[in-house]
Length: 269
Image (cartoon, rainbow, N blue to C red; front, side, top):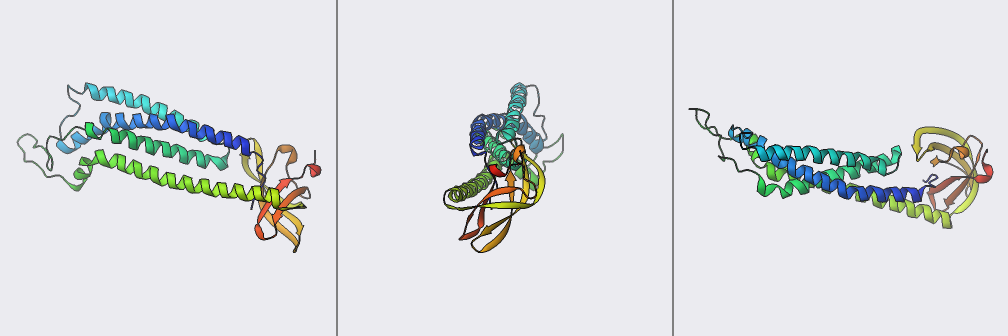
């Protein structure tokens, strides 16, 4: 079932902006992943495993990396918010912007933390904690072993999240492309008749400044009178109302394939 979608070209331009923003956003998250791994996680890992002060007198490089991390994550977060609005300024397409933004985050962190793997500081003792004062050395717990493999777990988990998001986005892209193909086929080969709105409901959603409605439309087909429920996104001066005429294209072989558009001749303005 299709509604009125007369904003394809602006949406495609917005889609290009979204993906172009993805490149610097991914690089910024890669910088954040690299500096965060070596400037923060590395020190916390040593303190957790060996009970030593990883922020001692020689912690100058780590402090510099923390400052770099703060700058990188600020830039990355700002670009991520920009991607949310680059998709299309509507509630319907915000989900796409969020998923693409999340993909750049996961992919960037996976790349940055992966590059940082050789630079993690080796623990002073593996398998047991260093003895505290005159106490005995304590064996590592299961959690300590997880922390020990953190240099590999961070990029692995981030990469897995990125892979899942790629699959989700690919499925969404294929579904949208299929819907666009069906819509274009209806525009070129579908039967065109005049329908009439019997019920209209505003969804409180705006697509590029235009309101979106749920409409019930009655029209006459070869098999008799039919009523379909679909959505319409229209300019304000062509907003549907009960009794207004609309243009209906349908496929007699596919009852679900119906395209409803405003009828310029039936506009109230």
